Image (cartoon, rainbow, N blue to C red; front, side, top):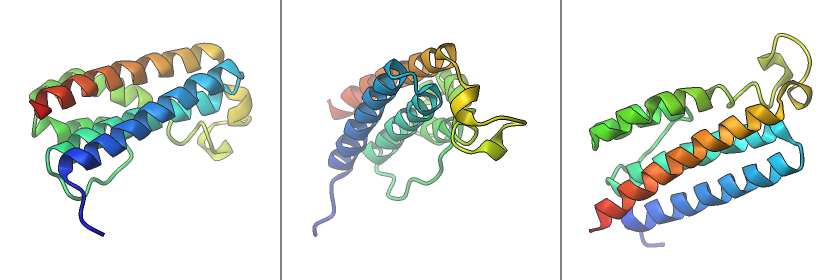
Length: 139
C-alpha cells in the first residue's frame, strides 16, 4: 500500500475529528454527558494530530491535547493560543471513562450537561482553529 501524502493523512485525521465532534453532540443530546466530554477531547486530539501530519510529522504520539499543542507550536506559534483549551479538555480523557479516575461514584453519574456543553465548546473552538490552519497550509 503506498504511503499517504501528509496532506491526505491530515484530511483523514481531520475528518475523523469532525465525526468525533458530531458523536459528542449526539451523546450530549442523549444525556450521556461523560461520553460527550470524552468524545470532545478525542475530537480535539485528532484535529491537532491532523495539523501535525499536514506538517509532515510521520509519527504523532500522545493523547494530551495540551502536549500536542506544544508540538504544533514548533510549526506554528499560534497554537499557544489554544493550549489552555487543550489543557481543559485533557481533564476529560481518563476520569470520564474509569471509576478509579474519580474520588467516588462513577463517570456516568459524575458529569453534567454543563460539563458536556463546556467540552463541546472547547473542542469546537479547537476544530475551527485547526481547520483555518489547515486551509492556510494548503495554499
